[in-house]
Length: 289
Image 1 (cartoon, rainbow, N blue to C red):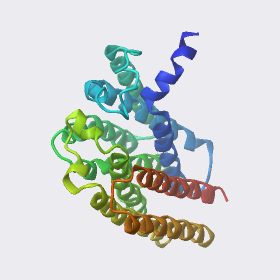
Image 2: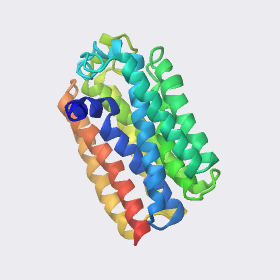
Image 3: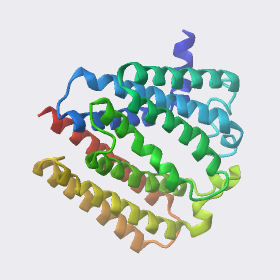
Image 4: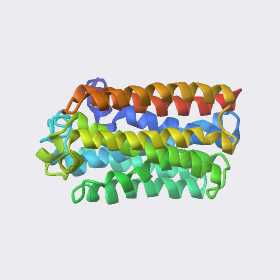
C-alpha cells in the first residue's frame, strides 16, 4: 500500500518519461547494430532505464535546495518533503549500481564503461558546470549520445564505428535545443535558483533562433543516416515530411514574434522531442522488418 501511495513521487524522482526515452534510445542503438529484433534488446534498454532513473534521483538529491526555488521543479518529492534527501541518495545509488551490474554481467565492458561515464558526466561534470556557465548544455549533450552507444556495443557493434558516430551525432545535436527550449519555457527559473541562464545571455527570441539552427542540424544529421545503411527510403520520406513541417512552423513563429512567448516555446519543445522519438521508433521498426 505504501508503495502505491509513493508511486507518483517515485515517478517524479525517476523522471520516468525521460528514463523511458533513454531506454528507447538504447533500443534504437541496439537495433541499428544487429538489424534484428530479439529479446537481447531488453537488457541494455532496462539497464539504461535504471541508469537514467538513478542519475535523475542523484541529481535531485544534489540540487533539491535549488529545485525548491524553481516553478518547474519545486513540486518534486524532495523539496516538498515527501521523500527525505538521504532516502533519495540511497535509492539513486541503488539504481545506478544495479544498472552498472546489469551492464557488466550481460552487455560487456564497453557498455559498462559508457554507462559509468554517463553517470560521471551527468552527476559530476554537467551538474557542476551548469552552476558556472550558461552553456553547460553543449558539453552536457554528450550524455545524450551515450544511450544509443550503450545499445550499439551491447548488440555487438564496435565503438569506433562511423555508423555509431552518425547515430550519436543526432542525439548530441538534439540535446542542446531540447535544453534551451526547456529553459525558454521557464525563462525566470534558472535565475531564481542561482544558475547562469542562456535566456539572460541572449534574450528569449535570439536564443530561440539559435535553437532553430541546432534543430536544423539535427534534421540534417538524421537525413545523413541512409549513407550509413540506416532508414529505408520510405522511412526517410516520412522523416523529411516531418522535418519540413517542424522547421517550417518554427521559422514562421520565429519571424512573426519578437516577444517572449512561452506557448511558442512549449510547442517547439514538444515537436523536436517528438521528432527524435519518431527517429528512434523507425530505427527499431526497420530492424524488425
